[in-house]
Length: 251
Image (cartoon, rainbow, N blue to C red; front, side, top):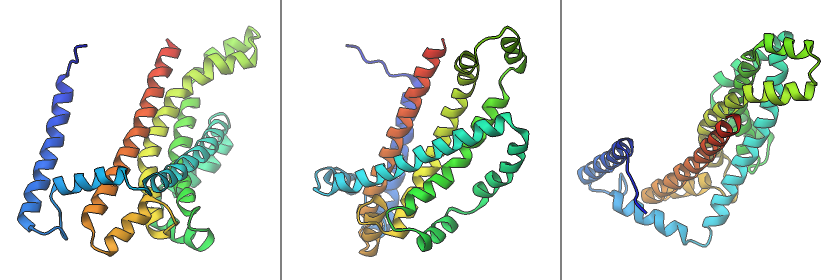
């Protein structure tokens, strides 16, 4: 089977190689693993993590927290977004809430959550609060983008409400939901890791990163950072796959 590589993929590969080359040059300048280890050492440490007996428990715990926070934010965001999209009064009511949640620093949420909640639930709570505004805003915009003349015509011809929802509203808001989910997931994963670093649950990528930093194990910090990036990338690919399926469904 012939595998073709596009120009865009060549450019992406060149960008990755450029970052690795800069990393290598900087590490050669400092000549200290306590400041910045060379990329080959950090990558070797990353590969060794995959065979570590605690890898699945650590990574799985972070993924579970991220998925839980994401699902909660999706449920709340879609629900609130739909209501705000069809009800101007509720939209005016929730708008300051959304602005506040997007403006408050993530660290403030974490510090308050450390007082209120257990270490295992702090990252979930923080992830939910940081992802909710993106999803809610996008769903609201999606509802407002629906052609009201089309809805009125459907009502005039006595089309069933279930059919209007299925064939008018859902196709209209789905791209907005996917876009909001992508944006929310990007910032949500960072919030989860920061929450784990400060709350120190028993298992979590942020926990082991903090422990590695305490002992100046810089290559381990970078290795777990690479793992976190890989996990975030995989979730992003799932979202993009869902978007392609959505386009096919709409077609």
